[in-house]
Image (cartoon, rainbow, N blue to C red; front, side):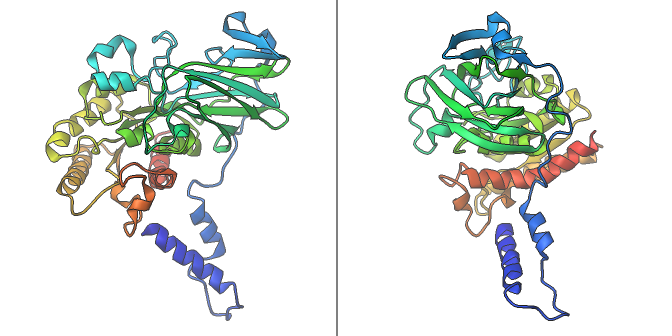
Length: 409
């Protein structure tokens, strides 16, 4: 409905411009206002820091332990090298540099499903700066995740690339996977120094990732983000990114760019039931904020009520000062008793937290994410969002999360 209203208001503006209005006439929405409404995430702004600041090193001079091969004038470097910034894996070093979203030393405390899905690199990002006019990317997966008919392979196991800093990061290209576990691609870049961001696959695990630079190209660590401590997102397959057409269009990655913040994705497809082990893991991470919505899997009042408030309490006890955002499901039906009861429970728990004195909690109503007149158009299967659905989710969560983060500085 909200987007229908926006369309009507913009139409009024366009129609009013077709003929000269009388002096006393005023459009319902001014041109400036309509432009602001379209820009849900505000004006993209590059980092205020100098893109050339810091120490650069020629690719060919990077420590040999990180160089995987040299061929055709290119030096291929493992993304584990210090010149890269890797986010989305809080225990990367402790996990022996394996791209695992949880903590390997605690793997026996997780459900088998959560453990298996933790190898999927949803939310994982690699950033770096370079003056190269093109770079090559070689990626090796642990396995090929096939057979997902409702989900594009480019989202399941592809990677995509953005260029820019701050909140001004523009899509460059997607590198499409093949039927084998290894694939590659070339990224064409503009001249001069720029920052590159690579979003890792949503439903596949990355075993190795190497970036090939012209050997005389210079490379440096990425610029600091506005929010260096990540935002954690906990939930179901939707939180993990199903069914974005590519990683960068999943809602948490949209929010990552819009807020210039790293993310830790704790979406577990079909397996998010508010487990204490995941709550405790979330509590162990340094965070800027926490967003959770798992009533897709814990989809009855009985399932959700047993874990929802305790999950919040575990995270809040460890993080007394961060914003915590309660979100309800997007594919909401007023005629479905479970949807109604779960949404009411989430609202009740949000109000309970505030009544207990926690004023740093927020509620975002997922039932309003999609136009109620035709919510199915925002999904693949009336459940998993398309890119349009994820964009709608990000647009509604963004202002709440932005305000909460700014108040928490």
